[in-house]
Image (tube, rainbow, N blue to C red; front, side, top):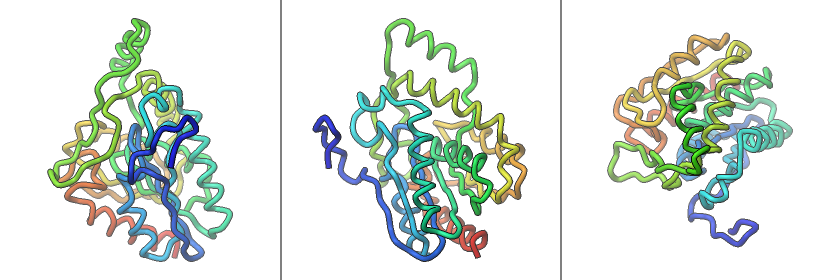
Amino acid sequence: MQTSDGKDIIAGCEPWSADGGPHGALVVHGFTGNPQGLRGLAAAFAGAGLAVDLPLLPGHGTSVDDMAVTRWDDWTAAAEAAYAALAERCDKVVVSGLSMGGTLTLWLAERHPEIAGIVLVNPLVDVPAEMVGPLQDLVDSGVDRIPAIGNDVADPAAREKAYDATPLEALISLAAGAAHVRADLAKVACPALILTSPQDHVVDPLNSELIAGGVSGPVERVTLERSYHVATLDYDKDLIEERAVAFARRVTG
């Protein structure tokens, strides 16, 4: 598979889907990541009989140059389109996401009260202003990217196929989008399962606390003691899949 300009997509990073019963699960990957990091969770939902969609977000899974020109509006539009397509053929839909995928999951839940439930793995809703300011200063000085904190996984046998650089203007756009999501958390009334790694070197675990205290629906918490940020590929991946499937069965049953 190739992008419109002929770049090869990294093997294993393509979107993934599965047919299933009357209920569905949308699974959303994170910033600079791709579907590879969430295929296990998507397959677990499919194995439980759900129709599953694991889309590739704009600018991801190809090259950092492709991502550098994408913004929050591009990713929300893709998430909205994927949800609409899945909801059209399913009676009830659960939405799940890792990191920025969790941000987009919350964004959808704030706009679609009919969502049956959400599963958030190390989600992001807060990028501190003291971080955004220096990032903008770098952009203003002509720097367009910095080294990425990718493959944040404790298990040495696991590897996330993420970008090795972070496009700064895209990151600043994510920070602004996340701030709007945080401001509207009270609109999330559906059940939420929040799974958090205390040792996360990418997203401060405080984000999970902010979400748990900000949404208006019931919250279930799981601590991922053995995993870092990309927990869906890490030592606790089986626990994540088990709890997410049980949650999905409960909220769609």
